[in-house]
Image 1 (cartoon, helix red, strand yellow):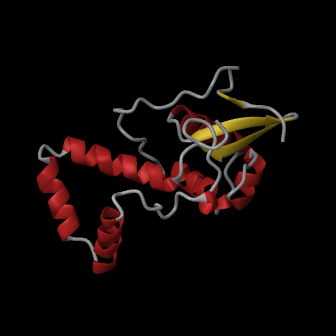
Image 2: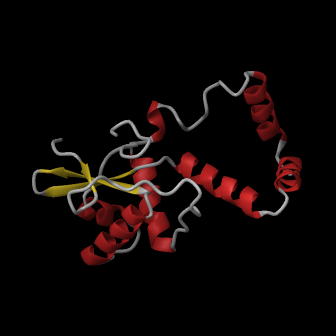
Length: 158
């Protein structure tokens, strides 16, 4: 692959503001992100269309990818004449940002966190206990080399 990360206008891909509300995904956006998160590779628009359950128009998927890029979830890379698309952040990073935003917006972060933890299954509590026992320095599931392509802001290709 040749080329570099870009925003479609020659500039770098903008990172979402740290305090910005996490991107809400529509149905088609979620389907596209599921493919990008699970694929472990970069895709052309046509390759994404071929993997989607319906047969959306090329322009529809190109628009969805442009919207996802503006939301800071998708990065692009030129490969000759083709544009390749990949997730800029892992599914786990996106989920964590949604959870963080929910806690910030709750009005009572501590109470919300405690309600959440009380509802966790035993296996999740054990995972949390082990992580905290390691001083928060242990590996985070889903953030290792097999968690999908992560380029652009915070990713390996940045």
